[in-house]
Length: 188
Image 1 (tube, one colour):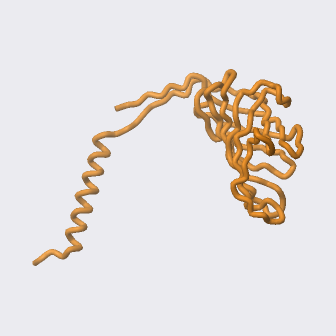
Image 2 (tube, rainbow, N blue to C red):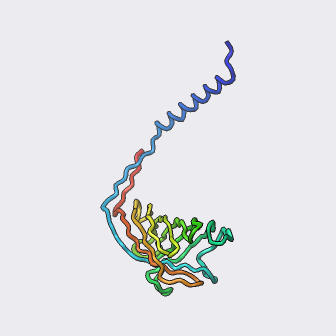
Image 3 (cartoon, helix red, strand yellow):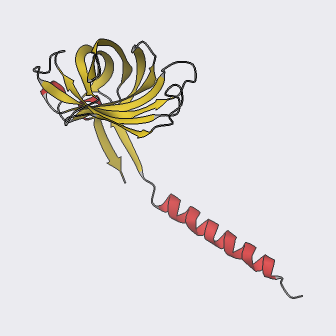
């Protein structure tokens, strides 16, 4: 009895499947890690966002031109400082996107990365996501980090300090749990 063209395609599929399975088990990629001692800290930085001028830190990439900002999307690369003054020391950047998601008020969903460029946390980041309400207050989750903050979690509470047509300054109280002495080991 002659084989149908469909039966040979099933045979090729089974051969390919078993070859992939064999290669996956022959070369396992695993790693082990130790988290080290857990640390809990609180510190404050100030978010300096500028809307106008040559040093603006926010750009609107989608403007729906509706009665409110629903549907608008902004991208920002704002400065993080040690104080509310523009003369205070710069310690990093807050880089992210603002999705205006409410039809009723000025609320936004904001995923952002706090990139530390100076101080004790230099070359480390915290990834944060959450909602900013129309009052400018936010309580957002820390969902991870890099550098000193590998395997970090916690939250960032922000509230406006000052606001005008040119920009906003907000205090970011950062409550973070991270592990001191993380060790990653690859096992072949």
